[in-house]
Structure formats: C-alpha cells, structure tokens
Image 1: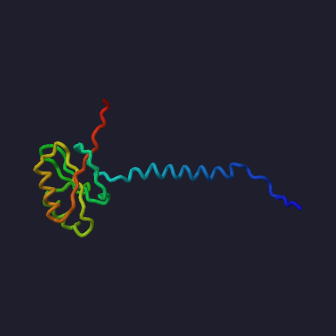
Image 2 (image 1 turned 90 degrees about the vertical axis):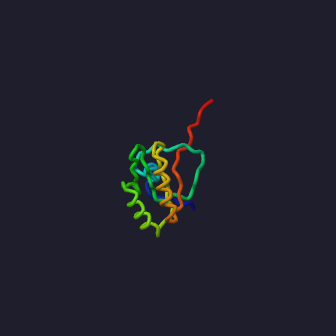
Image 3 (image 1 turned 45 degrees about the horizontal axis):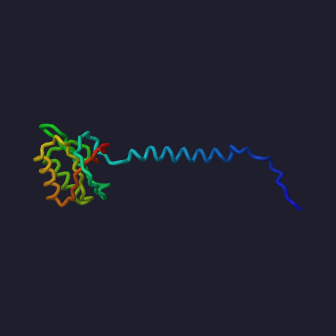
Amino acid sequence: MKLESQLPRQSPWLYTVPLLNTILLLLVYFLFSSGFVIQSGVTVNLPQSASRLTGFDRAHMITIAGGEDAPVYYDGAKVTLDELNRALEKDRKNDRRAIIYADVRAPYGKVMLVSSAALALGFEIAHGTTPPAISSR
C-alpha cells in the first residue's frame, strides 16, 4: 500500500527565497568586508617596490606626508616627533610592529628619524610601498 501526503503542494518560491536571501547576505558581507583593509587615512604618494612582506596586519601605522614641513601621523593622529616617541613607548607592550608610510616627497632625514626612533624602542618596522605599474610592451 502506497502512502500519499494529504498536504497541499508548496510553491517553489518557498525554497528559492531563503537561498536568494543567503546569497545576498554573503554578497553584502564580502562587499563591506573589503573596506576592512588597513589604511592610514592620510593620502600619501608611496614609492614603488616589487617586494612584499607579510605579518604586519596588526601593526601600528606611522605616516609621513610630503612637503617641506612633512607632518607625521601615528595611527591617524597628527603628532610631533616627541609625541611619537611617547606613543611608541606607551604602545611598546602591545604589538611591536610598525609600518612607515612615507611620501616620495618626504624628507629622507625625517623618515630616518622616525625609523630610528621605532627601532630604538624595539619595534620591527616595514616601509609601505605600492606595486610597480605593469607596462605593456
């Protein structure tokens, strides 16, 4: 004896709507999560380099803008060199990694002062660069 269901047939939309909802939620998640990339918030023209360095995803960001006065920013806040030393000393207990984003027009002496200050406090430093432009021949 074959048993048959007495329930009414359900519309196929009943099964496709949750699937579409899940796909849209994943799409929105991946669109918004791409904005979680570390950026300093200060626009600088970085030099080009083909090298890559990993492991600095939670590092402190030190940005040196271009120009004659070349202001320095630590994790997005404008600081003087003395304030930078104090902030690095305070954050030394946490993560001891720093990325220095120096504009191509930043004075080399200031970049070296900032690098030396971070190295003197035991920080590992990396210099932020952009990949070289691919030229078509």
